Length: 390
Ligand code: NAD
Ligand code: DAU
Image (cartoon, rainbow, N blue to C red; front, side):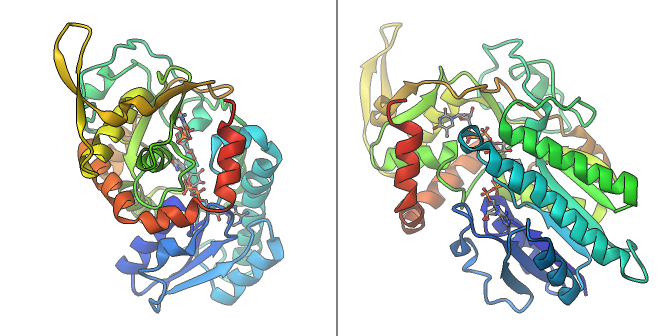
């Protein structure tokens, strides 16, 4: 029986990975190790919490002794490491917490895995440390043709059309690290530690760098759920700068699915970029979200005259768009080329964006209690701190 620790399993992506592994591998023991910060929520796993192959343990990854003891007790042979401070805006206000969790926490986890696995007769045989990282470590790309192509922008890894989206450069696995925010600097540093543990001690590691995820259970400090929640209550939608920044969006279940493939089949000491081949300017994605929420809530569209004198229908909540002061050091464009994954492990995103965003908006509207619970209490203070007088 495999015994696997998934760190950060109560968070957004982690909960989808835990759910997939618990359901797909009844013969594995899945241990969700999470500190339950503001971003961790056991309600994300209500549907699987009673499964016999699932266990939750509340530990801080920085607690080396606690993690080592857990590994020894549970005879752990695999770690999928997602626990992190993950929000760029928070990292700008409080970089220390990001260095502590993302750098020191990852190091503590690596040291615990090393101590335990090296104490076994088989040592690293059959073991794996899988580190989940971000495309933000590569820095930012230019918009070489800012006018972009007509939506939908989604293409596939096997097509070359994505090169027409907003720029002619993409992040490859060989792209030099060039992080700009305290968040991406901390993730870059953790990636280096993971590689160092392979190169120095022979630990069987694998790393993936993924683009922006969206989907159910994402904490509403990130663009899409925050905007869905604000549209619901007809609150202003704070668009940073001019909304011209480009992100590449991937449905979270597609990410969980490829994490499964890479955990089992990825090459030791290798790196894989994961992306959706789905680049959007923030302002365009925001308009899609407004249209979808308004349609699903049955809100009426207004008829207005456009710049060409034509009468057009506009969702009434378009008025909520409010341009605010830009994020400090705001990276202009992220775009992942994940064709290595397609070539070597036959993986491609399964969902077109239009389908993914519809599913996502529906989920938040059907789960308003979840949204209300995570936006009560401290969230209000957070919102005030980040957005008042911006
Ligand atoms: P999240 O913020 O939703 O969840 C993070 C989880 O980690 C929470 O459950 C939290 O309680 C836990 N955690 C935080 N500090 C901890 C600590 N010290 N010890 C134990 N647990 C701790 O994050 P997410 O969006 O699900 O991201 C998961 C991972 O994927 C992160 O490593 C992030 O850098 C990476 N990533 C995220 C995205 C994205 O778009 N969300 C994209 C690429 C990579
Ligand atoms: O690229 C992968 C990264 O994607 C992950 O590593 C991070 O963990 C994840 O948070 C995400 O980072 P971003 O900074 O791109 O995500 P966020 O949802 O915070 O912002 C998306 C874009 O929307 C970004 O250009 C900033 C903009 N934005 C965001 C918020 C919260 C706004 O315009 N207004 C907002 O209120």
